[in-house]
Length: 78
Length: 361
Ligand code: SF4
Image (cartoon, rainbow over all chains, first blue to last red; front, side):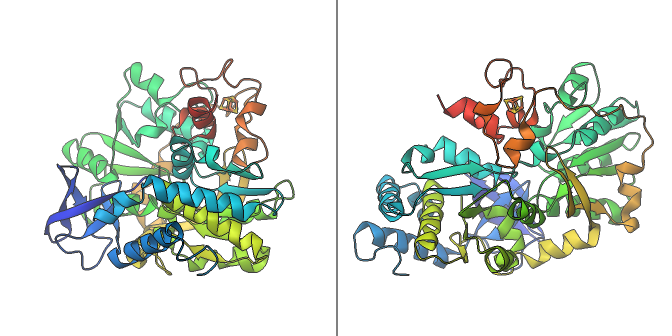
C-alpha cells in the first residue's frame, strides 16, 4: 500500500499539479511540498506528491553502486 | 530522470548480490526483516530471495496495512455499508479482506454502495456530488498514506462538506518496530526500513533501534538495486559488529522527513493505543481523529456490529510477527489461496501468504 511512483511535474497552478507518467497525465496534489517546479520529479502516492526526488542524491547513490561494479571501491570503504 | 531506470540495471544488481554473498560468508546465520509490504512484493517479484546466500534469511514483517487492520473495523465498515444512507469509499486493497462473516466485496455484490478510490480526494469529490448520501472513507495505512487522508479530512472540514466521514484505523510504524524488538520470540540481525514511510517520518526517528536495541537497520528504496544496496549495508554492519540507522534511499528520505505532511497529520489525528490484527494491542501505535474534527469521524455513527470472530486455523498473526512462514499454515495452498482467501495475508497483494503463493514453488 505504500507504493509511490516517480512522476514528472509538467504544469502547476497553486497546489494543483499535472504529472506525467509514461505518457499519461494525472492530477497531483502538491500541498505537502514546498517549491515544486515544472520539470521536477516527485514521488506520488494516493494522488499526492509526498517528496521531491533529489537528483544529486540519486546520482551519488548510483555512483556508489557503480563504483562497486568497476572495483574502484569495495563495500565498507564508505 | 534517467537515473531511475539505472536502478534496475542487471550488472549492478548482480554485482551487489555477489558482494552480499562474499560479505556474509563467515558471519553465521543472518535474519533480516523487511517491515514494508511493498518491499515484500518487490523482493518476491524481482527474485531477490533467490540471490541470497544460504545463511541470509529474509523475513516479512507487519508492514501490510490491510493485513493488520483488525477484523472489528472491517465488520464495522460492513455494518455501515448496509445502512441505506451510506456509501463506502475505500482503497481497493480492502475490498476482499474477510471480516467475521462477510467482506466488502460480498456486500457490494448484494447491492451495497461501495466504491474504490486511488486517492481519498476522489472520495471527497463523491461526497460533494451526492449531498444526500454520507460517504464513509475507510482510513487505513501507515504514515505514507495518513497525510493524504488528513488532507481530505481537512478539506471537508474547511469547506463544510459534512457528509464526508472517515473510519480511521491508521497505524504508526515505529511503535510496531519497538514491539518486535521487545519480543523474545524474534531474533533479528537487521531491519530493512520502509522507504516511503521514512519519506514522511525521516531517518532520525529510528535512532532508538540502534541505540536501545543494538540492531542494525537501513532505509531502502523499492528498485531491486535499492533493496540489494540496503541488504549489503546490513551485512556490513553485522560484519563490523556495529548498529546504525543508515539511509540507503537518500533521493527520497531526509533526516527529518516531510514536515508539512507530519504537521497536517498532527492537526487532524492524535495518537492512541491500537489493535493490530494478529499481533494484539500496541501502545501508542495508532491514530484517531481529533475531537475538533469529530463531525467527520465515522466512528460516531451508531450501528450494530456483529461479534468479531477470527478465521479458524489461520496463522496470519504469527506470520505478521515473523515467527512463522506461510508453509507452516495447514491451510496454505490446500484450502487458502487467492481464489478463496481465508486470512488477510492471502487477500492483499502485499500479504506474505499471497506473495509466497504467487512466487514460491
Ligand atoms: S495461508 Fe491463509 S489461512 Fe494460512 S495464514 Fe495465510 S492467510 Fe491465514
